[in-house]
Length: 316
Image 1 (cartoon, rainbow, N blue to C red):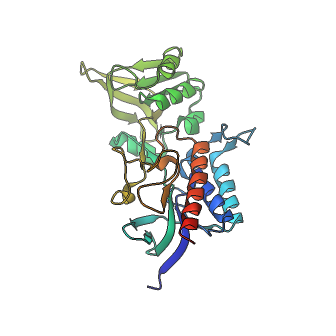
Image 2 (tube, rainbow, N blue to C red):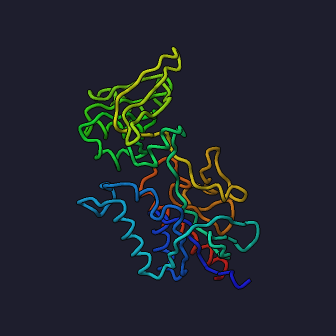
Image 3 (cartoon, rainbow, N blue to C red):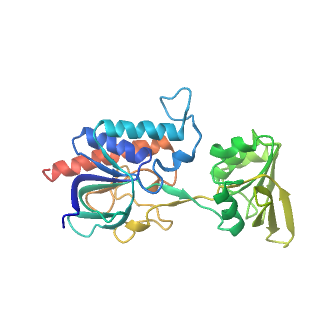
């Protein structure tokens, strides 16, 4: 039993949501404990320039922003820990969580800020070049710079795919969009923007068969028309995937209400409350609509304030 640690507030995850929650919780004397998770700093650590976060007129890189947020959380004595939570039990009054090192934590309140992970097609060739760092990416804003003056392919049909295609079009000589159906899922304004961009070619009704390469990097993409069966090879050096995200919520599914895609449902809209008393959610684990650093930070603040009010009502 000596391995059990107790805390007023456990924060699971360390992106803008987790660190903002930590700053607010620490300033409210809740002495939060924060586990950084599988990707310390979250998705922003894979983002190069962040130019839309208020207060950075010159912009800032994602990793630099996370270093600053971590330092700010630590300044108010947040117990920031490397590692991740592997299992939870929210069935009783005490919220029990287990870390990857076997440590058992009993928390009065829990703030879930585990974020989401980019989805890939799952092709063997795609994964090979992704792991190699040889031309496969799920973030055009992060990696587009490396493909300046080159030809790229992007898979996806939603708003984020259109945004990323438009971003790549400013850097690349040609961008080919692979759309599985005969139309975009994106909003009209975003779809029109890519259709009106001269160096973006849109291929409808096609699926990716294979990412082609020379063993060092990507050289092309083999696609198949799902109506005619015709196969086409598109020369490219960069293959971008923009088909959505999967929220990192699997460990909570036995206790927390999730929607059909795995996002945590708010118990009351406009709050951070979940269906479990004393468990709150912030950031992209619950947000499939906005997915911005600034909105994640805002919900981190809300979760900490909600946790503080919950503890006050319990007489802690």
